[in-house]
Length: 221
Image (cartoon, rainbow, N blue to C red; front, side, top):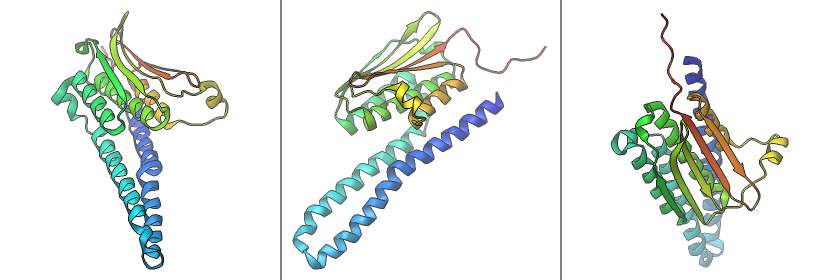
């Protein structure tokens, strides 16, 4: 169990590093290039500076929102303050504010069946799935649901976006850090993560947590 926790922490660090590299770091690099370009325009074509400066300001504002969102996801205190349903609702509200997309919630899973680690993983999976929708899906609608299926507490995130061919992605050996992160989080508590998607057919991310199987280390004797 200790090794799995360490592996999970390392996976989370690698995921965060990749997110920073692909997001804020790349955006700041582009912003520096644009600032240099604007410095030249200021002396050569000053009339063009205003519109391009507005574009640069918009880029920086978007990336500031992304950085704040990443920091927000690193703070699990919201679980203590809001409970799991409240934390998921808060993540969805932030998603709506950043994207303007229509996404609803249908939360009926009995959260008292989950321990603290399971609730943390459920929240992380919900957050990451919403991130993937925002970055890749080009969706217009979606829903986040929780409920019960037999002995499992279930979380589902659905969107009507462009989807993707899971088999083709796997066959090409491409890595999706969002999916990898969610699977590694799910593995830490012995839960199942399934992703169903087809091109132009949307995507469903489903986390099933057994409420009968203990997730902590067993005591000897």
